[in-house]
Image (cartoon, rainbow, N blue to C red):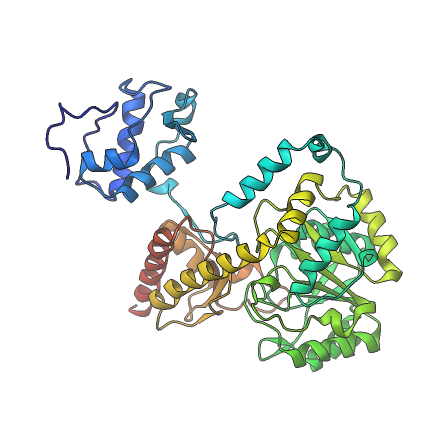
Length: 462
């Protein structure tokens, strides 16, 4: 029951909430900033527990939680486990940006996985820090011990890859692995075949290294044999880059027939395949990777940050023997070797089978988020299934991706239009990528989706 007597309530902060200002969590965040600015709340003040404050104000605990989280993100608050939430001592340096609607942009542009409870990971880290050899984790990595590579092999088997210890190279994340492959195995002026819409990080790396990307003709959402032969004969491509599972940004998963065809054409023409398996672990039953059909010409990259834990900037590369030394030298020269502490943490997650539990939880949570996408955007074409980290929203003409991106920004939602992903000279497809894992929680995701729905409905009614 709410307390009706403010005077008798033993609390360090008794805000007077402006209930006419919506949403309430934003009004509460503003009130906290005002009270700090006016000296009512001094640095170091311990704030009331969230449940007590919600009880005092007769509002939901989630409203208080969102207000506290917003103020924490702005540097106004700090939390100490087991002690509570305090006004930060350097709070006045954070008050240059008072929370307002403009600062509440909901992130759906960057493709990030949902933040999950990390109790088991925290326990693993604490255990590592209690061990006598903990200082070794802060040294330069020496390339991984045998058991680290055995752990990598176990995870690769989950994605359908069979390899040996000597086949594996390690890199500090998938983006860096891609950059190393381009720098070490191609030359400026070389051309690589890609999907017409492709991962922007590949575009950036190719531009930096002077490598041209050539869009390959498609059929049913994936590279066609005719398109491949055209790119080989007319553009003289020397490699192919693919994301066969949940392609970024279209979310398409390449068919088994398409994988076999690509391997057959690549083998006949002796071109290299770069297989980016960034989201392959999200498939409960993975399709056969292209490398299975073409092991001697495929560089397979399995990175961990998008599917297991964002902080795990680690990638395993399965590399053909003929080019392994060259790629290893490039990784060393570019200083893209892996972090020893992250390699140790990832390996322990894998061998203890905690990684399977994490992946099961992540699949369940992604499914829940995608159910919200399906429900709120019902009636519009949204590509991708319940396991997709992102969805591709097809836009009704004449609405372009860049126009929708601007309209969404005005509504406080950050999305990426097709122009960010387009390769070649053809006009970009009318669409936007929606990252379903980036919003902080399901409530924020739903808020963003309703705002996007409003834009679509308004355009339909014009």
